[in-house]
Image (cartoon, rainbow, N blue to C red; front, top):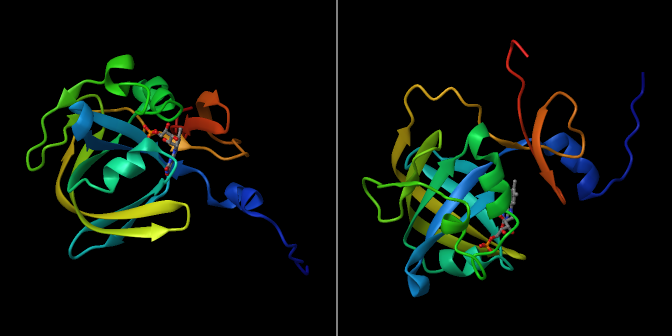
Length: 188
Ligand SMILES: Cc1cc2nc3c(=O)[nH]c(=O)nc-3n(C[C@H](O)[C@H](O)[C@H](O)COP(=O)(O)O)c2cc1C
């Protein structure tokens, strides 16, 4: 059989690229003496030695301006029970809201950096900023992993940003362009 290819746009490619794992970026907001949180699905490991992770933040997001200055930040991995908090943090801005207060985030102290982790997450990754790159309408921030803490005996599944084709995933929440789900367990 001969396969033909057709030109397509980025939205069509989303079907092939997604799902992507959802992380929560936690960054200090010095002027307001608090921390801001935003969900991220633009991210990747980019070095083993040293251990580096890259995230990309839209310049329109309040967090972009915070990450421009931050020397440290946390990447937290939310599980199923946090889906509503993730959706809230991904559809509201720290410009107007104290998202921590509004959705009842429970902090846990970090070990090697100032920004905290989240006590209900599956894992918290502590990073220090090693590079920032302007990339089109986003900024890319590369961080060196200082410490990773994983919750013991946590059976929840990590959250996924599911694309336009949600077949095969359990969908937990949907708002606007965002559909959040989990991969099915072997039993379901
Ligand atoms: C599942 C999900 C994934 C997202 N991924 C990203 C991302 O990778 N980069 C980004 O800049 N915004 C991303 N967003 C959008 C921001 O989280 C959203 O615009 C947020 O309200 C920004 O908050 P802030 O203005 O307090 O920074 C995502 C949102 C959701 C719900």
